[in-house]
Image 1 (tube, rainbow, N blue to C red):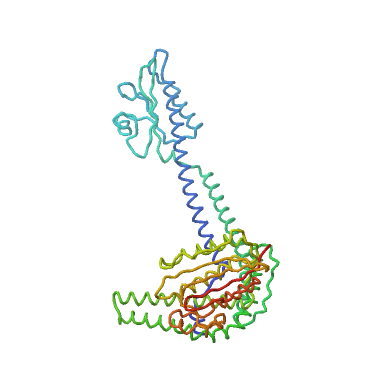
Image 2: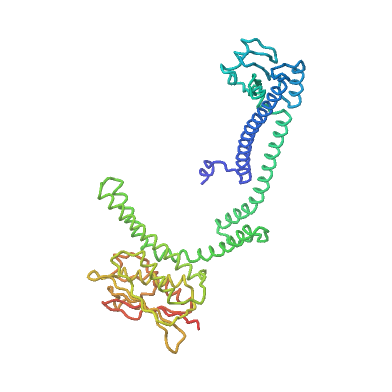
Length: 471
């Protein structure tokens, strides 16, 4: 035990575990959002500045036409460009070029030679030759005639430029959101960790056999309150379960040992290569069937123990018996093989209302129908009959389940409702714990009813479930 404790990895608290991970997730998410936002702002800034550059190019084109409808470069054009650059916050990397109809340069700012202009612009003089620049072109028109054009070049870097003040503001905002998110997660994790720590301490007490658990059930949060309340109830139920555990295990150990031994032998044979191919698959199928039987036995054992301990709640509702039984039989038939015939239903025309629990009634009926299928005679097809009768002069209704199976011998008829009893003729095939009928009778009695074996012979059996009427 000490070696296990030494070799076990160091565990972190739920507060540290989730706070760090949520902080990383939120930080990465906010950083990705910030990068995406910066990219979008740059694209919008480029688009807006290109529109502004286009307006500047058009204004220069309009001012470059004189009254004689010819191009005239104003002496104040340089001053105008500088004023517009300051007003629109355009960068010094901007270049303005004016050409005539013959694509000859008439003006440039900053001054350029003809070769330098040809180097900056493409052959059509309508865009930048370099991919690092973008051009806005405005034609110089007069009386419907194009006299030339104005080209304004700007670098993409300057078009995408975001002022440092905006970057600082956005970075501070991002940092504030990360800190606020971390603080929120930290407080929330600490709030959730406290009740979990209390429950963990209570669980440690239970592991040492102390079931007198007292927890604070005055929490404001509904889920935490329900957790504390449920844990205390669980501790009480565990105390009851512990009391009966030894008795139950002693009574069923032999029955559980048989399928376990069979499963172990089958799987061992497959693993060691004793059987191969199709035979190995068949062995595994048999092992799965044995595991299913073992699972059903454990489920029966748990259901029986819960009911005998008085911890299974049973409702007493007003139920319309005819549609309830019809639905139960219909759902059961969907799970059966084709060799099982559709059960015959004999229902009265007048409605009959019962007082009971629909779920528990379904458990009883399904258990009776399953027992009938398991008792199938090899020489005839399974025929089942479910009949609903109202006892005249009494306050009870009868649900009769009849089959045409192997029946129950007279020696065993008095013991079929005893816990862990199984007839000797079924021990080798069914391998059950013998709790199905016992559990069904306990359910019937919990609804103020009864379950009896009325008829039994080699031609089949008839079980009668009696439940109180609700007039």
